[in-house]
Image 1: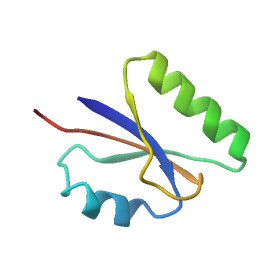
Image 2 (image 1 turned 120 degrees about the horizontal axis):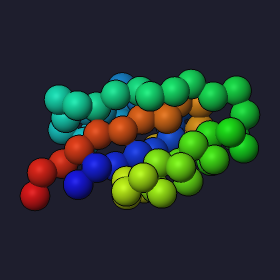
Image 3 (image 1 turned 60 degrees about the vertical axis):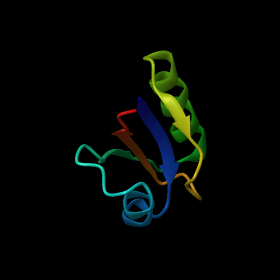
Length: 66
């Protein structure tokens, strides 16, 4: 399963998700509106929303195999 989310602390999120090998900060944002729009686009591309992050400065993705 592929996830996308927003955070101000990408390193913390990476640790909390078990250091996935494909964890990647995809984009840095200067406005919350742009960040929320990016999450919507990622969800439209098939990602699930990861809501564990606080803030919106960085958009990240990662996968978890089930």
